[in-house]
Every structure is written in structure tokens, then in C-alpha cells.
Image 1 (cartoon, rainbow, N blue to C red):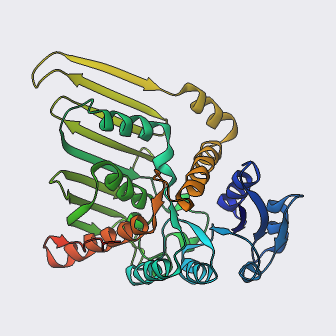
Image 2 (image 1 turned 90 degrees about the vertical axis):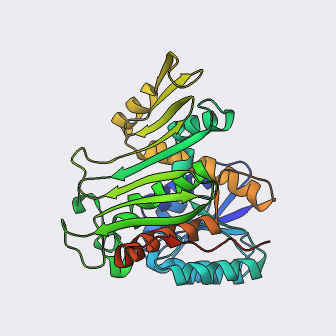
Length: 347
């Protein structure tokens, strides 16, 4: 498959490396308004170009979009209409209305639309999901998700935290991953009740804290928190509780906790899993080494998704739903009421 990457920033460079290193894909081009950066990311085997629209009339099969979120709508829509498959970085777009239009275009085009929620591929989350699928903790009863960091200094550019551009604050940043992981663990979310506020950093249209309760289609509650005021710095976790134990996935550092019992009140077996090889690698070479591995796995799943095979990769609906849930928390904040989410249309 011939692929091109749009965006030659830090993430775009990693995406280009994942394509160039996959024997099933050919990196044809990297596009960026900074053409020198595009050429550097493209390497010797691909082209570096300044105008991404040059790709629309070529025989490129798919585009990977690693650009700021405010450009996603135009790029996704035009790429799909040009007959290209698309893997778009999260968030899918910066408004719910935009996401809904993108889904309509994707359906009409018949092309594959996927969204890069790479946290699904973290080893700690894989461990958690595997044990849930095996029934290791019995019947699922409660899920907790948390994602946070300690403030605006973590952002490389101001568009990343200004709600007028990005579409929101903590829920569109670290919280968007947690929303997706909640759905990945419990299945579809149908109801949202929560509260968001921006009382710490006071950035217009950008909440710096949100807490919420989600309810899944099967009735499982999810406790959700996203924050830009976490004193420990960047971290996230997912905890799942069942009638025969619990399992936790944590980062950073990467780790798991599994507690099992034969029945409520019975003796408990505790398993702790750590990933020293990841901790050492990230200490020496940075967190991007782990991100690159997840991008490589996402790319393999993207190829399979194009072929119609079921994979862990998030689809366009998942991208839209994460935005819809963030909007629902804000709506619930305004009204004080539970927000009921739209049903997924039949295929």
C-alpha cells in the first residue's frame, strides 16, 4: 500500500518512520508547510512536499494526518472524497458538528477512516483488556479512568490548549484518550453526567478539570477524570473492578496490578507486572520510543481494517464519540442533567 504522511512535526516524523519500516507499505511522500521539515522526515526514499493537496490526484492509497486539529476537517474530507483511506490523529476534529460531517463523507466515500488512539496499544492496556476478555475478574462492575498532567508548560504550542482552536481543554487533550479507553473497556457509552471548569489556568473555552460518570449500554458505570492540575505530573490509569477481582493499567511508568479471588470475601491473589525494559528505554531515549512502537502496531491494524478485518484500531465513530462525550460533559455542566448520547446508525 502506498501511503503519505501529512505533517512533519514530532508525531508526523514517527508516523513516517512507522510507514517506512513496514514491509507491506511504501512511504511515498511527507507533506508539511515547512518543506525542509517534510524532506527531512521523508528520508531518501520518499518525497518531501510543501502542499499536501498535491497528494490528492496521485496514486497514493492512504493518508496519515498528523497535523494540528484545526486542519483535520478539511484534510479528512478532501482525502476521503479523493478516494483515499485516512488514519487521522486524535482528536478527529475540534467540534462535534465537524465530526458528524466527516462520518457522513466517510460513509459516502466507502473508504476506511481510522483515528489514532494509540493508548489502546500500550502494553499495560493490552494486559488489562486481555484479562477482561478472559473473564479473569468475573462480571465487570465498575471502571475508573484518570488522565492528567500539571499544566500549560507541557504544550509545545498554544493552539494545543486554546479552546477556540483545539475545541476544548483537558477533555480534548489527555482526557480524550481516557474517554476512548473507557469505551474500549466497557463498550458503547450511552449516558453522561458530569462537571467541567477552568478555574486554575483560566483559559477561555478550555476546561482544566472535568469529572464525570458515564454509563455503558450494559449498565456499567465509569468514573472519569481529566485534569491539567495533577501534582504528580503526567500519568493515566484505567481500573476495572469485577465480582472476582480487579485489574489496573498504569502509565507512566508502565505497570499492571491484577487481584483475583474465587468469590467475594475469598482469599486474594495479587499479580504485579512491571516493564523495566520500557522504563530504561524511555529513560535513555525518551517516551517517543514507546509511541513509535504503538504507531507501528496501529499501522498494521490500519492495513487490516482497510481489508475489512476486525482490529483494535479506533474507527471514525470512535473518534466522533470521544468528542461527543466531551461535549456532553459540558452540556451536563450547564444543565445539571444527564445527557443521552445518539445511537450508532445501522450499517
